[in-house]
Length: 114
Length: 113
Image (cartoon, rainbow over all chains, first blue to last red; front, side, top):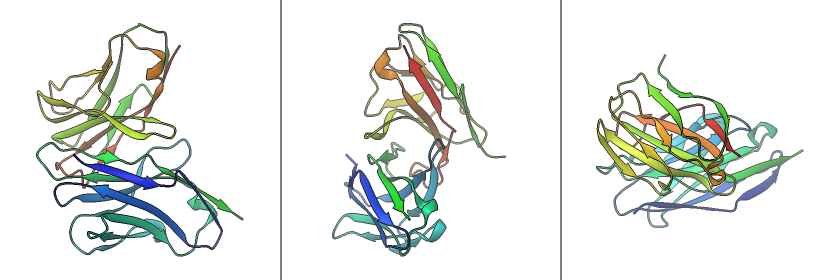
C-alpha cells in the first residue's frame, strides 16, 4: 500500500530564506509524486509532479523538488521565500497501478515572517 | 472549459437527514475520487472509481456511499449524516490511473449539526 509522510505540520521561515518541506513516500512500485498547494479558503493547485523523467522537477512559483529513490524522498524547496508563499502544502503519491489512486500526506502549513 | 463541478459549495444540515453532494466532470475521465479534508489530517480518500459501475473504498469509507452510473458523474451520498462528517470535501478526476493530470473541484464545505 502506498503512503506519504510529511515531516513537520508547521514550518516557519523568514522572507528571503530557504524553504524546505519534507516528504517521504512508501510504494511497492515506482511512484508518481506530486506537490499541491492550497491557499487559504481555496482549492488545490498542482505545484509540480514527478513522472519518471528527470529526477529534479521544476514547478510553478520558483519551487522545485528532487526525487531520491534511495531515500524514498521528494522534498520541496524554494531558494527564497516570499510572503505570498504562505499556504498549506500537500505531498501526494500514486502508484500507477490498476486502481487509479492518489494518496495525500497530512500537509505542511508554511508561514513566512517579514 | 475543462472542469470538475461540485454542488453545493456550502451545506449546513441536521443529523440523520440524507444528503447528496454531486460531482460532475466534462472531460470524459475514467478515474474519479472523493476526499475529505480535516485540519491536521490532510486529504483522506473516501471512495474512488476506475470507470462506470466500478468503485472501491478508500481510507475512510464508513458512513458514505457512492455511485458511478455514468462516466461524468460521481455523487457522494451520506445516508445518515453525523457531526463527525463535518468537513471539506473534494472531488477529483483524471484521464489516467496515475492522476498525473488531476482536476479538482472547488470543494464542498459540509456542516452537520
